[in-house]
Image 1 (cartoon, rainbow, N blue to C red):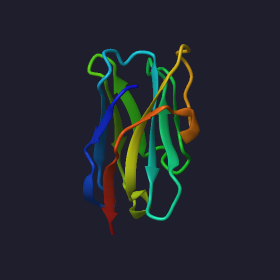
Image 2 (cartoon, helix red, strand yellow):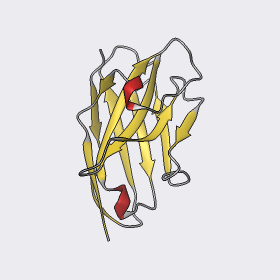
Image 3 (cartoon, rainbow, N blue to C red):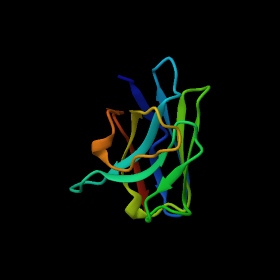
Length: 127
């Protein structure tokens, strides 16, 4: 089991930017496919973005394509989510998740596929 700690959330005006980070406690980050999810008040947790363990493959929810960029630095054992052109509907608690995989070029987009989760970081986008 890997421990994940998110950071970088906060309050930002619409149109602004934030970069979220997810740091892993595991000795090695390689072999873990990673993802970002978010949960708005009263709503189900939803997929935002995912990345394969080498970083070669990524996938995004339609609602964030062109605005969010997922990346990772395996040497630093950290994953990132760069968010630009933020909208009020992006307001949510953002969670990072990890899944051990033997296959490099795969990504996972559902909550049930992930084994480990962080505690979340809150993003609030004001009008």
